[in-house]
Length: 52
Image (spheres, one colour):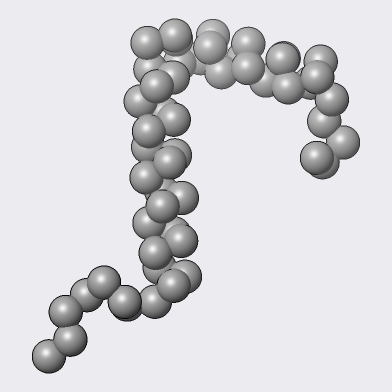
């Protein structure tokens, strides 16, 4: 995975916690999940929209 091992991932996690704080991490995860979900919907096309 991009040449990242456990020590590198742990360091990234510590930096994220220091920058955003523990309380905002769930909000960031939720926003990231919604963004990925919307991106996948966009790739599928306009299936869910009403057609005239």
